[in-house]
Each structure stands twice: as structure tokens, then as C-alpha cells.
Length: 201
Image (cartoon, rainbow, N blue to C red; front, side):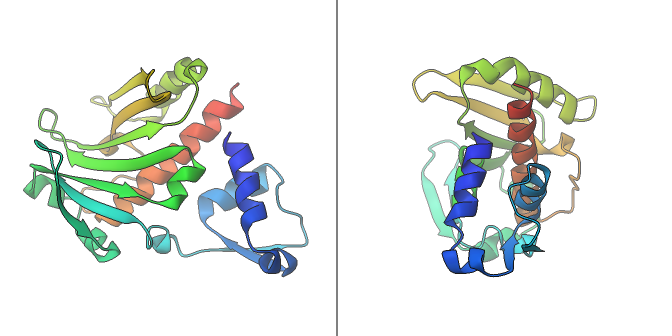
């Protein structure tokens, strides 16, 4: 499915841009397209500034208990350090972006776990139930550290996986990172997860 969506994304790049000798894409998509030979050799690929990925995202600060929206935030809010979530344990952040559709995710929610004290990412992952074993194997392999944990439940009603994982155990996590960096790390982790799961089938 990722392969199909990547092909659609490539064809959706404007005709003008495709006719041009170069295209601009982000690192994850670039690596995927080169690996799967989706781009012809005569096209120059320019890597986009990764910090611009979520410029157009819809961001909400919400109350954990009521799930009510406390406020809609602009991209600037993501400049806050990730420990914002530690200082505001009663809140979670909800981010929607067109980029998430590419990897079959509806939104990424970040919050501080009350039980484990970790930064948890929660997503609805659009993958068929048959991928469950492969998902679990890949999550076990890719999350590092003694306390590494995740929850994966197939939601029959929505036809997707409810996935919850601690960002602290993802390669590249730093306590001093910004919320924007945490969202980019989540995106990269999920992108690679979906890629590996699909390749394993």
C-alpha cells in the first residue's frame, strides 16, 4: 500500500515539476523512491528541508480527561521542547497532516505517559489484520532499551491498528528535542515500519 501511495504521490507532483529536470522531496520519500526505482535517472532529486514537513499541519492541544480541544495551535507551537508534555501532563497534542496519509496514518497524538513517564505516540495505522505478526516483530526489533514497550490492537470497527509506542525507545530520541523533531522522528519511525512490514509480505 505504501508503494501504491508513493506512486500516486509521485504522479501528483505537478506536470510542470515532472517535466523539469529536478523534483523536491523529503528524505524518507527520496530514499524509498530511489530504493524502489520509482524515479528515472535523468531527474535530479533535491532533498527538502525536513523542518518544513509539518508547516501545514493541523495541531490541537487537548485535555486528557475530557478529550476537549483546549486550543488550536500554529506550527510555531512545535518549537517548544518536548518536555512541554512533562510540564503539562494533563494535555495531549493531536497533529493531522497530509503527509500522514502517505503512510496510512490518520493523525499522531503525543503525550506524557502517567504510568511510565515516557513520551508516548499514538496512531491509527491503516493496515490489514494479516500484517499483525509482522508489525509486532518489527516493533519488537526496532524499539530499543530494557523498558521498550508498545501496544498494538486491531480495531475491527475502523479496520485499522491502534498503535501506541514510547518515543523514548526510538533510535534518534533525545530528551532535549523539540516537539517538531519528535513529530518528525515519529513520522520516520512509522514510515520505515510500514515499509519493512510490506516488504516482508
